[in-house]
Length: 220
Ligand SMILES: Cc1cc2nc3c(=O)[nH]c(=O)nc-3n(C[C@H](O)[C@H](O)[C@H](O)COP(=O)(O)OP(=O)(O)OC[C@H]3O[C@@H](n4cnc5c(N)ncnc54)[C@H](O)[C@@H]3O)c2cc1C
Image 1 (cartoon, rainbow, N blue to C red):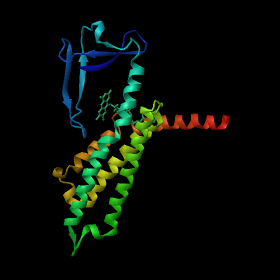
Image 2: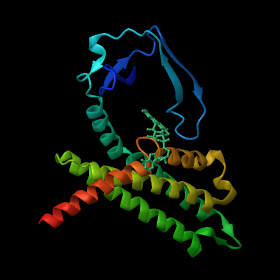
Image 3: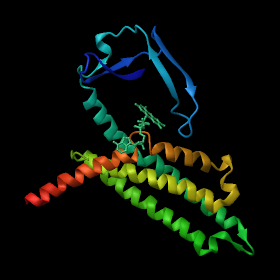
Image 4: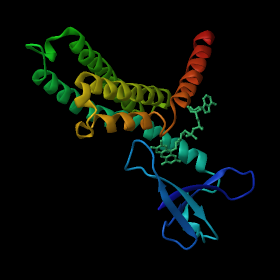
């Protein structure tokens, strides 16, 4: 099923339409090669005289902005969790590497510069964990957690990019081997800073939140 946003009246608000990818008039592809997120392939989709029944419309006509807003909010709230899953694995893998790999007679893990990269990564990951769970708790408590969701998504992207690139750096040329999963994780991390809303889009939400909060403080 292709979730499609289309205007049903000229210049009107968008309507959400569920289109069967195998329906007559739908053409998908070819897949465009991109870096990162191999399970989320990009391709051009064209529709020519595709018949749409009333039951294929999701929500009311013109309601797509509301549906999109709700979907993007959940996507932002959930975006830190794949990063946290990767982080636990990556830190364990790097700890294992620095215990085995030696510089002279000593394991790499005994050098403070190397330890510092791992402790900095842990600060980022654990701060992200708290931020992500706090945002979900606010949302589940019925609060409009848009600012918290944007903060969590923005920070998740930064942690993911830093973690993947630091994992490569600490492991040296070994870290560049595709088999470690780190180069793919770096590409995924960069893609994650774009998919579901770029860093600038998250900053925009946060800036609007700061302005609203400032107005409330000035009024009090
Ligand atoms: C892996 C992946 C999966 C995706 N999946 C989907 C999907 O399932 N469905 C879907 O609809 N889309 C999907 N997207 C598209 C994604 O939502 C967009 O790529 C994203 O919103 C950015 O839009 P853009 O690429 O057109 O960037 P552009 O809009 O061209 O922006 C380019 C740059 O300019 C910045 N910029 C743009 N406007 C402003 C502004 N006003 N102020 C400051 N900076 C600005 C952007 O932040 C960005 O850095 C996916 C993208 C990726 C990478």
